[in-house]
Length: 327
Image (tube, rainbow, N blue to C red; front, side, top):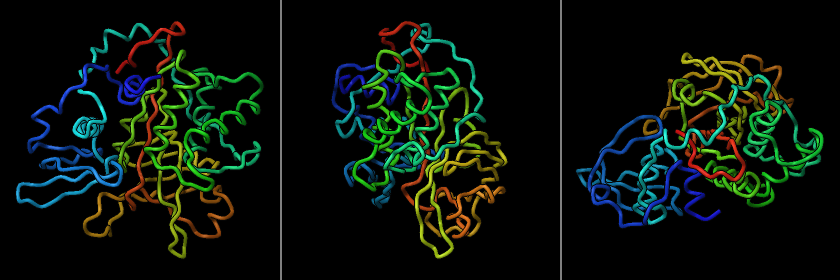
């Protein structure tokens, strides 16, 4: 799959002739965060290999934000301004919907609770694990089969190894949301190009209402969070969301087990930080022994690298029939 086609998968867009950045994008404009917050600024540059974006407000003060904390539309504009994406026009969704199957809604409670170490894997990267169990859920629910013959164990072993190859960069490396996004796109490009399209969306930290907007249909919603021990050490944890209500009640697959509880805003947040939430686990006895011993707490929005990965499947009615994913 060529670059433009891969861009279509990630952003759900049609390619057109590459052009200079649209003039209006170079002027001061309103920018929107993935949490819906809006600020006025003029694009200046990207930093840290595109991971951060710098703007200037009307007083000349610089504003820096993580690329993934911008809305998907504004992420696309930044890519246009930096010459990393073509100027595009979104298609009419009515033009391509007939190319795809109408999928039954799968039961999220069936997302498997698995320990990858029991499947012979040498890597236990948290983001890979949650993408892995979620794709196995699609497979067993009949949404999208794993493209490997054999029984469940054989499929699971192969899939974890394949995802690790595309997502993890280094032995004990912790994958970022952007790296996971790129890795999933590569997996679909290499393994499922003739079968399906997966629209992949990366978001900044989200509260209950933001999460509930994405937990629809057969979407996979994975939360990357901070896992803080009693001694104040912080680590990474990821969870596949099963249910979420606007008042914060949730269930998810977390660290290979079923977790449930409530997502609540943190009241004593440090000044200058964005919105922060704690995941209060009500069935803590279900957590792995290490998390119990360390009296682990879980947070969204405490650090800049946290966020959400959303995967939306579109399955071709006829193999090899190419069409942009319906909106």
